[in-house]
Length: 636
Image (tube, rainbow, N blue to C red):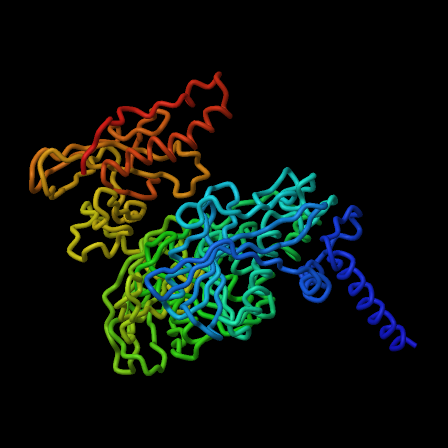
């Protein structure tokens, strides 16, 4: 009797969900749910019925508004597609659709742009040059397109919210512009964009230029989040989210800090979020090979969150990262997206397995050893780069680069002397391999001849260090960097003309932290006399500090050749005129051209700080905007 009852209940459960899936999608306009009881409670329920009930019964109504040629053999189109109808109004998405002229059955690619950016013609064209048929949608309907797309019909979300949370109920908040009238995960601003990505896949699958069985998705930052979200589409054959789409921002860790953002969802709301919108839930539903492009200090996708997201995926997966970078990558890491698609969509490359990394703690010296073993691969090994940190904040911690020594068994290792044994020790390695030089004229990848294979992260928590008798070894240096290793410990570049900038987090490391009352001394080799340089100090890496912790100054370089510059803490002021009090808690030092700093002060810093001043009100004299002496004209 009990067995029979269990069977009846199982069939009833399936039937209820089948009806729910049909109800929330329909075969025409997307139904607007008004009853909280009909709102989907899991990721499966959110999308149940989409393919059969909605996508197949709603024509894309594709319109090619304009076609033109690029670099002789690349055909570019500005295309309009129907996303869907909401409350009687139609939402459309437009974008660049590019492929080699005369192409047939190429791998297709959907490429998503980041936050406030727009679709990029060059982005679509560059992938077409690499042998892909690429659609680059524009999700920013607030910006006017330039170039060949200027004046043409553009993306129009119309009646549906695609721009952010609408109120205190966060992504579930309902109002007149949301998909549902009741609090619902479909009210998330990313939901219409996710729909558009899936509709674009439907478009690609119908084009003669595309092999419908070889479609990939790729995106950076906000586009990385969309890549993760769209990767649940069963037609996706490979995915590369880049510094976005990893989630975990409400998961407080007992040791790791700086990896959280929003802590306001509790109880049933938190449960609904975790089951429907949490990116880690999406990772658990991935079915196609995925490469996650990360940066060790990324603000949008902290590396700890990246690793936790990857644990949820049960597919063929890799992580490609780089030390001391934020939201960008060196060429040997960046090229991983192309190589991943060459492997998974073309079969023209074999992406190597991840190197195996481990921390050896029980050493007679009390100094941990980090060891990495490269995988078996036909690629030629060029070098091994090994990094470690004993910081706990993924956004601000500085990664020390070791000098690897090779062992007889083919493994490599470095010693990891730590400042503390009550802080976590984390290490990873990049094994650099030679690849055949990429042939793609007028492309940033042209001529690239090496790639980085990133190991797993090896992590030891404080209790493990203490149980293994790891001994702190504090060695402080007043020299932050003599650049004998070039820009190894810095991000940015010096080759960007009058917009150059380089930054480092070494100043956040206790080994290089300036004592109270000290001066920051710079030795600068100026190419000409009378130049000006910008110096920016940040106390909190995240922008949530409203810029009151960004301190800056301009320094003169009076002569050609070497100049010695001395900067006191009081020389550095924030947008409210406050002086830096000491060098502790500093998280980043940036040296930049004066025009770059001037633009940043008058733009980003003034804008954000000004909005804070408005919120504080006229009664708080501390928050009166005071940008200081910003030069009218600057050189450097």
